[in-house]
Image (cartoon, rainbow, N blue to C red; front, top):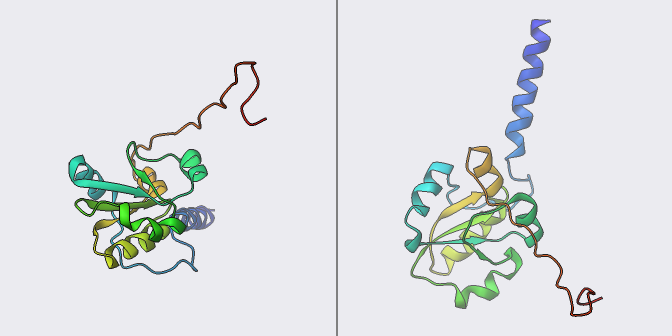
Length: 149
């Protein structure tokens, strides 16, 4: 019986650890994956850092995010380089740091100062608090109907 309990605990530990891992087919990144403590230390000086969240809006709504960030989806990042400031250290964000790492590599290659990347869900698993973002209510027209209907 003890062996069965130990085996189940081991299996649960392995399964839990794999939840934070990037998919096997995810591109490999050279970016530093920040821990919660490293991230918190960097954002303690908000005037020096820019957080770029490369997730889709529905992912930010579903999982939560950081209070202040620039939202540029991963697919649009390269087209957006011209208007991203180069005078701040950048942290990229995705759910598990996979897309964030690729984004960090792209930014580094283009001359940006990148501190690293972080996964929002990993940050939360390490005890960090994410801001839950509620989508805005549909706009109502003067006659009481919804706009766009």
